[in-house]
Length: 200
Image (cartoon, rainbow, N blue to C red; front, side, top):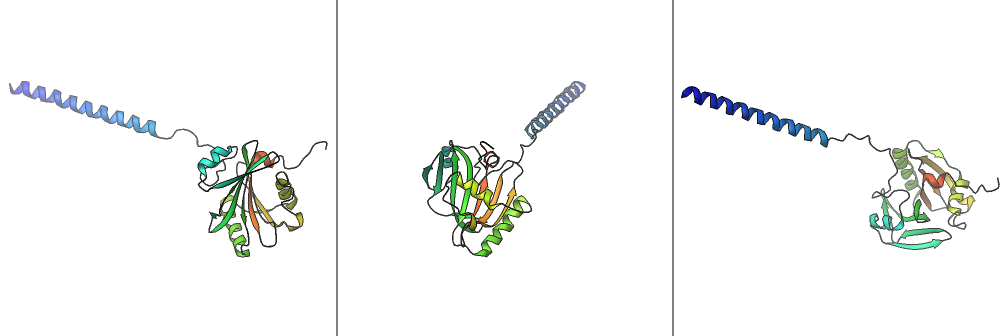
């Protein structure tokens, strides 16, 4: 009798241990499958709360919390925030610019800010995008001219500098009047066709 009980206990112990081992194996397999195995996507430009190039106006509205006013100019649509938004430790007017209902350009405008603010933002942008380079005022004007040819005067675009993100997004910081400066973000698609080249 004792022998039979010992055999039954041994068999039960083996079954229990096998069951435990199986549970651990299943758990390990589940953990293995939950680990990320895909290669991370290339570092693409994301603006504020996940806004991406090529989004349409409705998609941008869904992500941008600020109230916006819409305008149309030629074949461009523009959405402007009704109030200033927080940028770094400052506030600015924000504009989203769409061509054929695809986001192509974004700008922050800082009216009447102090020169120290410009210097601070130069450092902040460099910390994100690397060393700044001199930017051509003519290129900045050409970009804005596509939307509003009367917006900038070339002689007032000063201290222009720029950066390029790894996906080809261009970022420009510049004065567009004696007291007002801006940060402009340009999609790679728009940046590749800044100038009109028909007939050249």
